[in-house]
Image (cartoon, rainbow, N blue to C red):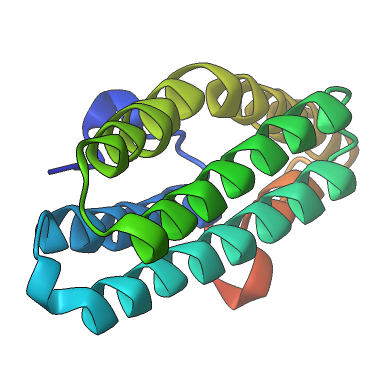
Length: 167
C-alpha cells in the first residue's frame, strides 16, 4: 500500500493534501486486487481514481501557472501520460477483469510512476514554489519589516481555501 512518507512530502500544503487523497484512491484500487466478483465496485473505484487524478492535476497545473513555473508544459505532458495510463487500466479491467496485464499495469504505470513523479518532478515544482516564497517574503520584509502578510506564493500554494504553513 502507498503512504505519503516524509521523502514524498513537497511541503506545499495543497499538493501534499491532494497526494494523500490520491494515494487513498490508488490504495482502494489495489485493495480491490484480483476480485473478479467485485466488477462493479472495482470499476467504480477506478472511476473515482480517474476523477480525483484529473482534479489533482488540474489544481496543480493552475498553481504552476500562478507561480510562473517554467516547466509547466513538460509537467503537463507527464500528467497527460498518467491520465492515459489510468484509462488503459480501466479499459483492461473492463475488457478482461483482474488479469496479469492489469496487475502489471497497476503496479508499474500507476503505483511506481506516481512515486517516481513525486520524488523527481513534483519536487522540482515544490523547490520553485519555495524559492518564490522566500524571495517574496524577503521582499516584503525589506519593504515593511513589521508586516506579517503571507506571500503570494504561499497564498497560491493554499489554493481552494486550504490553509498553508503561514496560516
